[in-house]
Image (cartoon, rainbow, N blue to C red; front, side, top):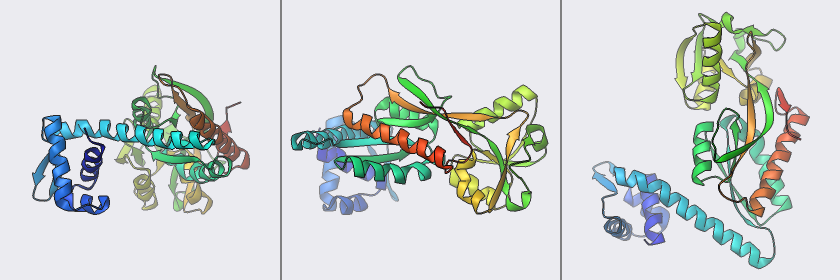
Length: 311
């Protein structure tokens, strides 16, 4: 199986178009088509359905995508690490998984800290919800991740870092305030915009509703934080989030918020590392800086309402 064929396959899978893939790979279109055909012959199954509007992955193609990405990622890691070892400095590729609600706060200072301390380390940031990050961690697509504490796996070891309370968040005119907590029961009859199941926050809210025998009116749900925020800003309902997820909007008073009470609901963010493979030095050093920057964000108040749990 030729690496060039795998790269061509992944590029076509991502673009859905051979012509666009050829442009990205700096090849002519027939060369890309030939690489896909040779890979299909090697696999023994068609990888794409050739449709009028583009290339659509077959079931075999969908199965191959994950393996191909991991294979090329491991080779990238090896190339960068070996090059750094030969040069006598710490280097390598580190892929970190971050939650959508934390990525804006952590990513920039982390990249700056890594560049200053270990210029040979290259950081790749993957953003996803906790369940997706857990899968990527198990499959080796990410080296470490920040997850919700509720995500469990025998292949993963976790260290609690941060506890943060969930708030009721609404548009500016909702009149919510930090000093006036809102009981869960007070949300009965209100229109709510919530994350889609099985999102961790949705699970926490549904558990609290079951315990208190409360039924909420969910007017819309989404698996994208940006959409959730936009719907609330558009006046389509209230939502439940940790304040850090919309910190800029709260500070600018585009949104307002109040702690959720009776019952209060909080989530724990943990550092997750795999137990079934060793943690290389460049990964360990980068993770140490990630923890350092998260702690610094708590101490400075940038991480709104977060409470540090780490050492």
